[in-house]
Length: 129
Image (cartoon, rainbow, N blue to C red; front, side, top):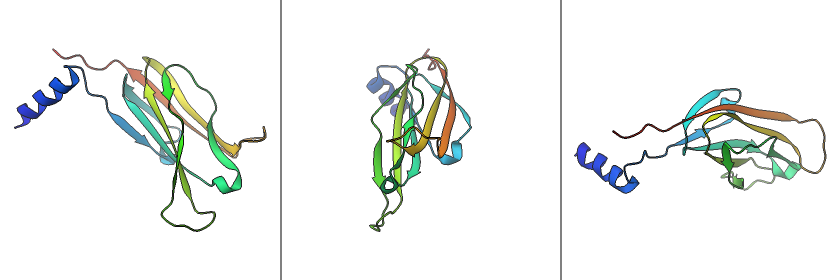
């Protein structure tokens, strides 16, 4: 059964390694992680958009391709309730980089209320024999 499942995965992927997805939260701030080229990273951080504060990227490079961030509402419908801002990245270039985000008002250039940084090492995926 396991051999059949592995054969199916390899057939679907053309023998190429299957990409993985890693989920990160505020607890991962300051960590160093290792992913393979082609893997996805999702960062989920609490936000209160009603205050005018939100998360934004501090810097960007070509090693990590970012999708447009999205917001997920909390399960409560209370005004000012918590929300989660979700950033999704795909590792595209082997090397070292970082996901660096700032939390603050989008309309002014003021000191950041908070920052979030995860150091990322991107390696080549393992090759099939």
